[in-house]
Length: 131
Image (tube, rainbow, N blue to C red; front, side, top):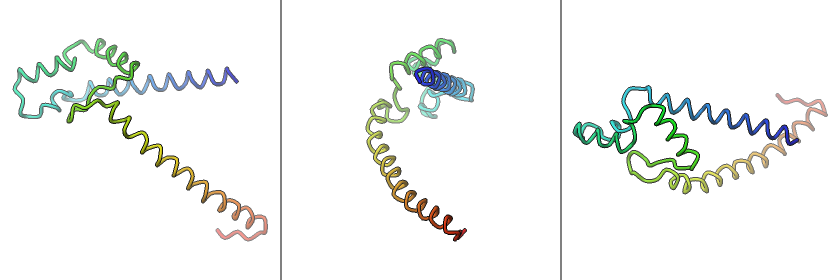
């Protein structure tokens, strides 16, 4: 059982690492960058360069990737582009609502699935298929 759990955890880690890597490099290779998106058309060239430096976008790609991985390992998700609020705080406020929706969905699913499944099995057993 411990071997199975270890293998599944290793698969989870490899998959998460692959997704994180894919997202990072995809965002770096599309045209534009986060600083340009934040600045819009209103910021001067010098201010845009300062913003890129502040965000670490002027560093070599592999240094940015390393910093990105270390930030994720510390659960430092950065700030939003628009409001400059910490992303972790926003997610922390959204998790209770998300869990409430997920739990209520699971409960409703069971409340509907068990009676309907029982009724379908009973009808199939009696030879009265209604589909």
